[in-house]
Length: 517
Image (cartoon, rainbow, N blue to C red):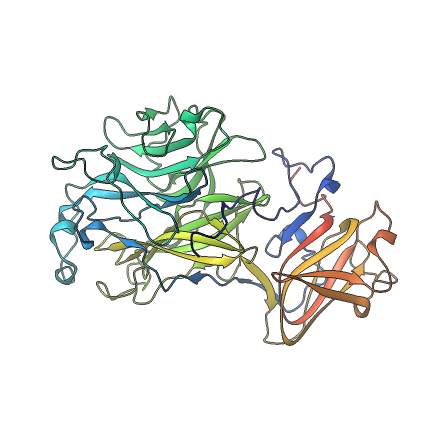
């Protein structure tokens, strides 16, 4: 990827759109107003009782930028040395493409002061305990025109040891995120910041800026700032369904970290954060979970903290798993067996050796570049609460290819049956990868998935390549426009040596059971 690419923030306007659900969970008044996309991992698409055989959800391939990673490191390892960057720790990177200024922006949390990390070189850390003392948090800033080569500009905002020649945006804050909101009519509020202030009374605070650098003074929440809580990546986005601002933050319950949500209409007054998701015990806690809209689903980048049993090899590390939701209040693993989205590098237990992302991963929401979704993430080597070095990396998945249905048993035939679908046009497309010697065919059934419709037998189905993995589905003996326009029909998909990622077109799933009443 270079400066010539087409950049966008992945979201409802830039990603494929599945059938929309309204804020109250109801179906839209007229679902035939546009094309819809359904992803394979969305359970609402499938008949889970009938017509599934030898199939399982598999995660898509996350491709790391091995040529350029890591993109930048802690400043004490750079030349010239930046003493105000001794430890990124989790980093909580907040990366987006700023179309107005034609640059990538990265806002990241760090420790501005950490005597242990500052004064102990990596080769002397092994065998010594990491001592937490006299640490001070802050938020720093970096930028790039191509997403690969980053600079840390001298902002002239915060004094550090008698000089403002640094890239510090704020001190005594953590978990900062910035929402680029170019449609706000008030230009002084185009960049909206939220962060946890740690001095002068701990509180979630907001600030605003016209240029993404010079922000107003931090303004504490008037009410509802959680305590304890919010010591995580406090990511904010604007929900296209309600036009409200949504904050995904963190609370504690029974000594377990849990994800929580708060809403605001004006970015100043926020509702009381309420739990929306949790992991499973000490060994799978959701440390933070940046959320973004993809079409009309919500996807969560859950950093899973492995606490508990100290004898386990992954103890005190952080994995990155993908979650999904249709409503923000209930969340699901994308793949039941393993929803790992960004895998660790090699050398988890070899610090100070090992890959830069071998032990800890915290991700930003994606930037869409042509047919790819790029995820910028802070990777760490070394245990979460011990000695650690962190750096910014990136990788991508192909657009729409988060997870697919494939065979559970080698190259054996797999089959899937959808819920009832209503067709209001001829356009039916499948995003599918078919290996050499593989095939996919589709019967069109009655709504219950028990009777094949005349003219829509599997041997009559045809797939025509459209590009980027999408294939047009037709039946040469009939057309879906010959069907009863008010009825719903199920597709029985049979395939071998193939992976199905998504279905889209002039169709929508029968609303009954797709959303809670």
